[in-house]
Image 1 (cartoon, rainbow, N blue to C red):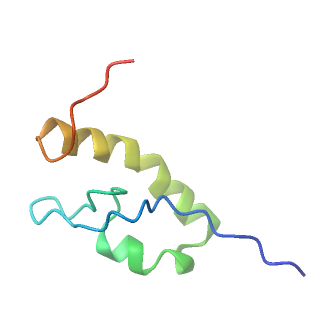
Image 2 (image 1 turned 120 degrees about the vertical axis):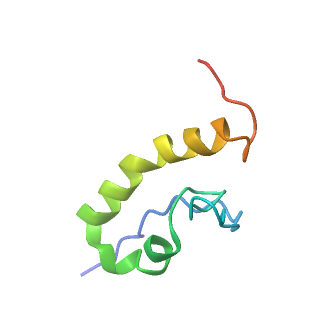
Length: 70
């Protein structure tokens, strides 16, 4: 049986915003980051689905670069 790589949104910018608890690089919480492997495929997919909204919120709060309107 071959192990497949576990997808991670980590971009190696690991700084957690104290106000929101979200990583400024990927948008995950410390609990999500620490338990990423144990979340399983479905759990990781659920977290991944929330990240764009979290990152947008961080941007709107001025914690990241400007909001991009496509």
